[in-house]
Image (cartoon, rainbow, N blue to C red):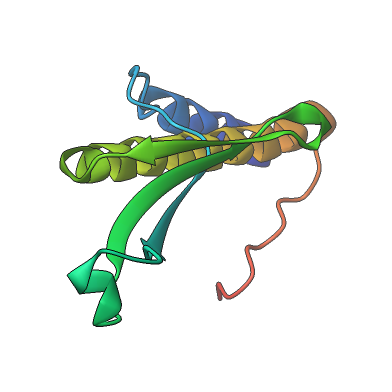
Length: 113
């Protein structure tokens, strides 16, 4: 019963800290270098051009790529981080709910003492 109350308290604490904003993105931000085959002095020197791409995989294995302008890279990274934090919080809440609903002993996270 005490463990159940402790789990509920931990769950409520996580719920109160949930980030619920529209600044969420799912996917991966990739940095690529493209090189033109001709008429580009920068590419001729082997430098190429750095570009950023947001890659998102949808159900059914379909993948979509979005070009990201340099000035939007920081915003995209922030939205990706927000999504990951929200996803981790939801997973933690689900684990606590398993403990509350089914009175399961809480498993220790890997690497914790």
